[in-house]
Length: 377
Length: 193
Image (cartoon, rainbow over all chains, first blue to last red):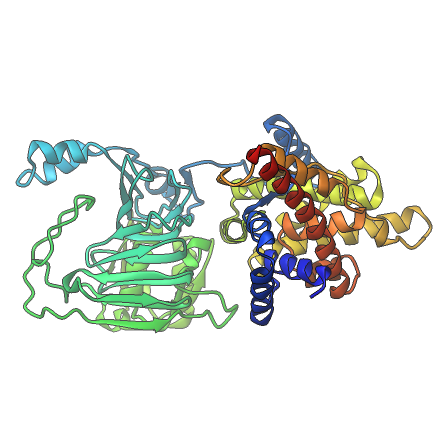
């Protein structure tokens, strides 16, 4: 052993460049030379920080100068946002203001609201607990972004609500979701992040994934983009389902008996206690759907303000998504049209533009009155 | 060292959500070390700052591709190096820049996260040992230990062989470890008295 070989092994070990054979070699050297043990240990515990700004002023000044250069180069850059921010909403034709300017973020104690809803269950203790809840909701046709105290970012799709405890992030990281949201969860291995929905609970450490859990949809879907999630179907509490990236878990909403669990205190709405005799939930793990045009992931396309129809759902099912997206109500006067399978992708189209484009694919007519759209043959 | 998982989250937020706040965080995270790296190549603070700013403008303009970048640290250092060399060559009538002249002269903070095993004095000792490393050796050490680049990446960035990077890292650890070991022995003697 030369002393240089020893340092080569130490440096490789410290930089994650060492092979398993070399680890053994280093261990043997250290048995012969125990006097180096302490040094090697200290070196491996050192944290080498990269260069940082001297202070916040210097940092702000550098970024300010950078933004000015960007402006001069005519490059569009929005405000630096923080916390809850409204995302752009698609435009409707005509009476848009009435429906879409009414974007509402309710970050407020919802004690009263929940208190009224849960009159039966509410003891004084419960009320105290609920007054510590925060809720963020979106109207039909609006989406928003929330940054939670732990740094996790949640994009909330239309007609959805996210509820969390005011103490979120201190000892627990738990939220409750109705509707659809994309989560980018900050990693914190000692505090798992838990999402409660009507039929499933999802536990994660640090990942990005989409959860779709609208009460009027047939299924609850969890789509994983990155990392790992653990899902428990509420009626089968002992069974854990793990997802790999690019997989999604589809759980049927009606097939869960709700009598097993008490509703979670974070639940924004009580479940209606329908007693379904079939105690086995139906679930399936599937691959995420790729848009054949540009290979983007369909399940999370809404985050990018895109509404995609892929012939895997009927017009009537797709209309549910259009209703939420545009904040309209769609009625079908024709079962035949309701059964068509649309294939289209929308980004900034107004509802009339979208409908007109769908009309190119198959024959139907529509009538708009206020926010009610009637589809006819 | 910068945490790769944090960088990935920022990348994703910028790529998928046009997140301006994440962009600012990313900028602040990399700006100081990239500027120092650029200064070590082109020896001008103003040019270095402009080059790094230009690289970040490109990052914003092409943000939809940002998620595909596997190792953003390596990507940024490479982009800065290339721009520096282009500018340098424009100014100096295409004189070849010698990458071996590169030396990073910037202060760093070293600490033991738990402050259990090592005294402030020993940290000073380590800092001094790093400061006394030959310039090229110090640059390689900083790119690996502070910026988290792999040996292979540093070799590519500085146009060296992987073996050279390995040797330089061995040298750095030998100097730092020896300084530390000396200090430990001193302490041992001191506490016996």
